[in-house]
Length: 286
Image 1 (cartoon, rainbow, N blue to C red):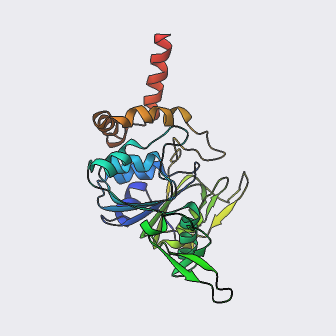
Image 2 (cartoon, rainbow, N blue to C red):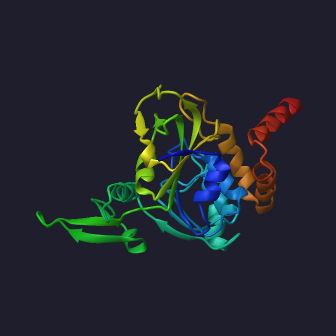
Image 3 (cartoon, helix red, strand yellow):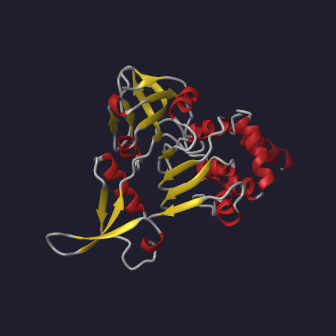
């Protein structure tokens, strides 16, 4: 049954060093605030799981929180590489990073299997590529047709962390819009932390694709308005595209990255202030 708490307490209580942590959300509802709390608490040796690791995982990797990344695509959406991820894989900075890469369909099948209590998922995929030889995929035969199919091991993270729009006072969570595999991640995990924009008396969806996660599927709920920024929560704000562009410059240099993280994350300063400074500078220069 869900417990209402602070984000700091939820991370401290539920995410030990060495845990496998799935932080989901697809362009939308990405739990950035929770990722920053992992960094502030100095979590180490994490296995980070995410279909599309983007800026939040670049930050976690660059700050030395991760030893393994399980994923299906990694990049700064619309901009380019994740420089801290690339530095860790290519040069072992700040520490070596093991990677396990899958297709989007493969990762989805793994989550669905974990959420369903099954040992593996089955799909038509990986055929004709060398990815199966480089990752955790098996081939099985359909007992009825003889067709050769790909089997992928179920994902059962120690902890799933997602952001959602609402929770009601009974601990049920409501989210809508692009929900990705956030519901499956919660159902597959041993424990789940949900940050939300607001606590309401009754859930009232205000967008497409509404999902309700019952209170018994969630371990901890923490109200964190704006907790998805620079991603967004439909109905509560817009995606901060300027930040994604600026991150490419910030993250290229180890020193610039470290200074930015120390000031805006470890110093718990809202990083939207950084973009405000840039905007002021642009006006002054103009």
